[in-house]
Image (cartoon, protein in one colour):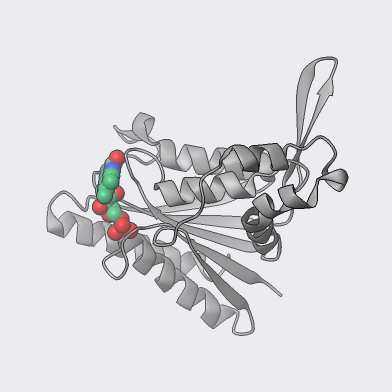
Length: 212
Ligand SMILES: Cc1cc2nc3c(=O)[nH]c(=O)nc-3n(C[C@H](O)[C@H](O)[C@H](O)COP(=O)(O)O)c2cc1C
């Protein structure tokens, strides 16, 4: 049975378009999977701790099995978020574009779930780094909203879109390579164009809900 983790990244609540679109998707998906579990992880309106020195020392401790108990505490949130990610086979990240990338809460979540030994491994082969993804069997959907138009594939601002590329790179790095992006664009342009873009995004999401 599938279950779905929804990471909510907008600092906005009811006014958030990425939230609303993601919820429309989840409702449609639930209609297809009535028994499925839906978990929501708030990272836009709840503080996800940024990486600090204690976290780095604990996460990269040379022998994780011998990691001192006191260091283990610095990884509690990260352990929870990694377990949560691994416990779901479908992932939705709902997030606006902020300054050509993802909002800081989403970046903080990324920094907590990319964990050596848990979601990826690293080894050296004759001095050359080798990375092994440790997350398997998942599909991801990114639902995003942007102020301007043209950040999608082939668009005039595609080269400035560091949000989708970041998410695809990070998810691929840990083993989630099946990633779909659905975007509404133009909140800061003419109201009518944005409404049209939202309607198109919602149509795509409702269609995707049948096969995701
Ligand atoms: C701090 C901040 C930075 C933003 N940066 C961008 C940007 O780089 N490019 C863009 O097109 N829109 C940008 N926007 C506009 C948002 O992406 C847009 O309003 C989006 O629809 C918000 O989604 P939400 O309603 O889910 O929060 C920014 C908005 C904020 C608040």
